[in-house]
Image 1 (cartoon, rainbow, N blue to C red):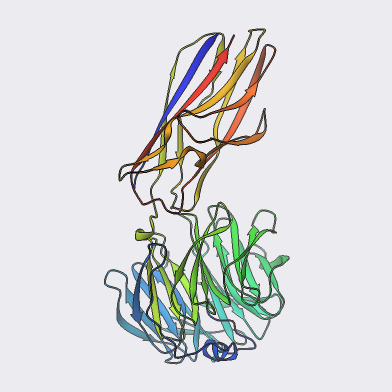
Image 2 (cartoon, one colour):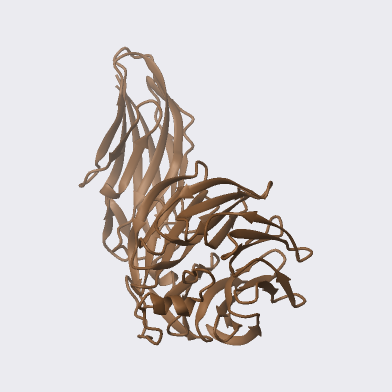
Length: 478
């Protein structure tokens, strides 16, 4: 019997509230029965740290640019500027009537504000200007790769297209009924519009400035966010209390995830694969794992939450509380964000079984406690033998689990290998020391091509800590 072993050693290092026909956020909070004056102390849940920052009157929209958080205050008719380092308001910028949606362009450094009462879009960082758009502009999105701004006209059932270089409105695109939230995907050149009254999402092609698809979602979709790294779209459904997950490649809804009463805002952190949902009625922020489409944590704030924004560089989340006139900063660092798992391989031994094409390294993306890190096609290789008795391909994990530097361990049951090519099937390691999985068995001379997905589930209770583990490939031949 021949023996070929490959050893892996891994280490881990540490939207505004829905508007109908131009209603402001405060009016809709009242219409929904939410107390405008409620401002309970924010409390951290699941290990997250929450910092509360007073802003203007009836804040509703939020955007982040170069260490500054911009918050639209619809009743005080201005934008609060928060310094991310100190979490203090450093100034305000005047806007038009009822400033609502807001978006920032990291390339040209401009910030755009939709003024719902004036039918204008104002700019903050360049020469002050007011760009005329359609009726009751509500949401704003920017594609920095094309220097194009998209604005939803809530009462006109259209989207305005603005050339960021000239500040000119270059045209309008008819969409669904009551367009509200909007997001652009620079990677695909598509723009997604949440049609509040139509219960749909319009998909716009930037190249043609036309709607190329309409996707039914939940009840009263209000905000939308895109992860350009996975081509996935997340839609907050105001009245059905859930999130619609859309595959951007097929425009199909792949999951519906309940979150809480009146989800008003949604944001994505592509670096961690986490999705955040502000539930205005429940007064909570739901934390979703993008790989699993499940809620892994809930941060309790107070009722009246509006939109939110995520800073991908710090992983901090800024949540607008329309009723309390505050912004809550959720510190993602305390929740265990970041980190990676890296496996380094060495091959020892030769015999009647050969193994070729093994990459030698499996690098998992950053994963947080309560999420799963998945690597598609983590290993792709060929196993072959001329031995009439064939071979068995076995994957085993040495040790009893992922060992944490701070003590304790992550069980091997959190590690899954899914064979996707020659012998399709998914298997999860069992408990105990040196558990093994038999991926394939043959009874005649053969040569087989394997492709595997590797997944590592991190329990929600796991602290952010260094850990290590060894994985061993065993290809046995007779």
